Length: 303
View (cartoon, rainbow, N blue to C red):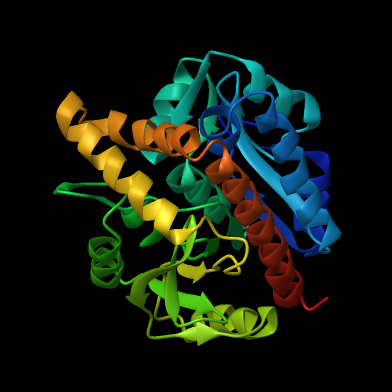
């Protein structure tokens, strides 16, 4: 093994060798997205949701400068409890490796690593997108998905972002988006962002067929985003959502918060203003996405 080669957990390495279904999972939600100690508990529940639906979880992170695909529980605990965990997008991976860093991979970082590792399905909560009022400020998730032929299962983009502009950018970048049993794009905390989709796929088997078609045609090499909304009875109350979002956006302006500080500020505002209800919704949607991703991986593996 070379100095900076990707390392694989034993279970994931065996599954990839045997053609068994594998689902990639990110670690930013563990280190930066959820409060302690809930983060570690939820991370284990996400892995279990993948297992319960017939696939092998491949949680991805960096430990001591080495990318690990399929971190074990001790490594997961390290990323969940340390204050010295870097947030790693694609651009950060080589520099972080050279410095021997511990790091949690974003949607972009995880997508790129999963594609390099030969893992075709990735589950997350919500993907990044174009920021409100700042069309020049967009997540690296978008351009990375344009280069990575994976299936990304998510609950849309975070509703604190500009959903319409994000969908336009995905179209420009050639990234396919299909709703799972819906023609409405979900809004993360809420089931319907108000934006329609051209395509809907109604089963894991149909999604697997779309992945086979992409591979066999050899024409399209970008991601397929599967937008998986929460049932309406599990979403955050839309009226509460809209009120909290409006209050949060007003606070951004009054406090002069910009750039990278915007998203964590708004997510923290949602958590406090909804008295933890937004966190419960966040956990529900990532568990549902992990289950669906595993079902897709099983269908794609023909098992």
